[in-house]
Image (cartoon, rainbow, N blue to C red):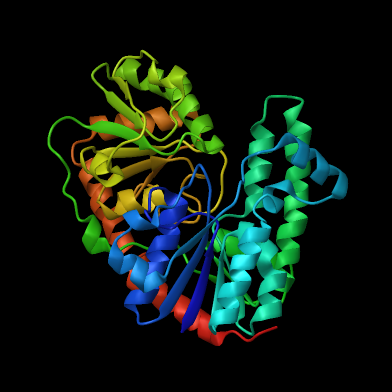
Length: 399
């Protein structure tokens, strides 16, 4: 198949969950014999240096990036309030990107245009004008659910009503988009169920994040158990969860196990966390290799209380045979069983108990980790994901 992949940020290098989800799909489609053209938005936060990319990748994808300033602008946000546009979405539309898209669609034929996330849907009208290709939304998150959860936890009484307004507006937009695409590839069964509940006749399939298990076969390190969290701190749910972890959970663990150790790392780590002085706690910012950071430690903690979609880091950690302790929301969308291939807890006391279990019960960390890797091999390998996606794409008809 001839596929145009429209991305809201560069998929390469794959440095965060979103870019990894896009890159792994690109890689899998190419390996399966399909042609993929990548057209992406680049920003100051997510730059693209084509000269620094592997030659084989640039040749295979003919990757092209267009600069769009997606940074928050108070004036534009206020204007969208008046015009009823959704600022979360509209800030990703750019005339320059639209022109680049027209050129690409005019130069070559495509069978499928794959929209990576809701943020690329403002370009649907242009796509429909310039190609007969199928238009498929790959939904990374239910954005309105994410906003609803953030709004429910917002403590600022001024921001809370605005966040709730954005959530309602996003839900209306997200559901309306269903009738404008030929298919939806939802990243989790929960997301697919939300779309199906809308009553749209648009075909929907669950196409989760996948990995190559062979690339993630890393043995547990020796030494005492080390807990760790790895995630970008400019994503609000991560920041909210980590603050809860160090304030509410970690003191309970240390009270029972003074020797326990917790490592935190991630892009844009706030200064107050970097300088936090707590027993057994080590905090750093961006790490050179996320995979090596995981490989050098034992138990991944995912203290999320908001967010949506599917946590890529959990999939990677499980693929590496790491025991994961997560909230229910953190593990949402992943086919896991508490006590078998993951440990779940939603309150501070329960989360601390699960962490204590990892220290108290010899063999538990290794057993949960081994079962976790088996789950990934069976359900989340790239080959299986691509097979399901291609089958879904071939079943679609243009609306």
